[in-house]
Length: 423
Ligand code: IMP
Image (cartoon, rainbow, N blue to C red; front, top):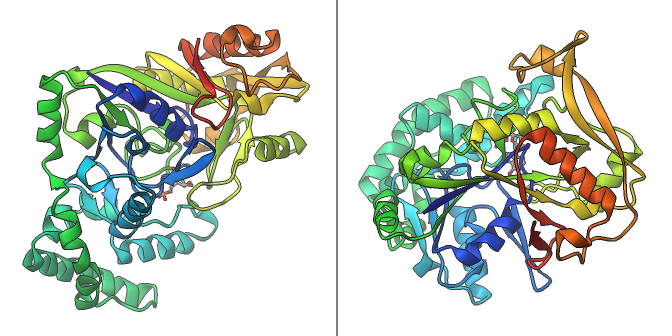
């Protein structure tokens, strides 16, 4: 049985924690897209873990974790993460499978990503600088280098030389930057050959067997629906498909093998990097949310932009992902805000927008219609059931359910594993 877990906003919805929570009842956790741009945070017994590549399910022993073919893998980050976990007593190497056909993010991808975003000037995307776009660009261009290529020294050298020829031309002539030496890069990465070897497999075939044996598999999406390269606020998006459909192409499984699709939404909205954000708050309430919610990027440390819950956005995410249910996180952050708002409708030039706008001109000039609701003062971080929530918190959740048209099944009220309950 395959369950897909997907962010319904602009990422940072709390996926790391929810994955860790749901992993308790899984056999396998498999990541299907993105790369080291992600930052999934989990607290266990007060200890903080931040994962950029390895699925947070690794914290549950007996679980097999997979980095699927749709993930772009930075060997430096991956093996730093593995080493750090192994130093803390977690057995990673024997429980991690890496898709042989996943593409590698190498040093030059990271530099190119940073230079290119800089070059965009006022139109910069605010990428994480982790080489994500440049790695996927090579993949689409058919010049990418995969895990399986690194395993063969001769192939790796040959592909590096081809890939760097054009890039060096660009670096020298257009960006006036120092070119890369293929020999140097080959030398830098050769130590990873042996490290990858025991974990690199045909992970799709492994999953097919697991599915036929009735194993429970959690497919983990990174980023969020509106950072999706096809359906997000293009061009202010990431270079992959975080939506649930990405689980099929990013793991090599058929749509019919998926039985349950869970969306995660923060009780308000945040966004890192540039791009439209209709319910953004540039006032003290936005500051309050940032401070109370500790809204700083887990990967880059950048302050996150904060705003009210955007129901039209999450409603569209419900349809794009085929959501069966919604997990609402960080409800506790809203305590002590006297009056809360939920964006319930988009208007443009006085007219209600029935469809999500793909035209950025429209997106930039949207008018949001809000439903204002009274807040609550109680600290709800130790609540362990829906019944314990204040009336106004229940009303707020009911409004989210009604306006997004997706049933809420779980609520998270804090960073700890235990601060989450089923409705
Ligand atoms: P890239 O994925 O590094 O190319 O960045 C593209 C956009 O996606 C930027 O606005 C980033 O801030 C955003 N982004 C990428 N990964 C994450 C994430 O894990 N959480 C939130 N935003 C992200």
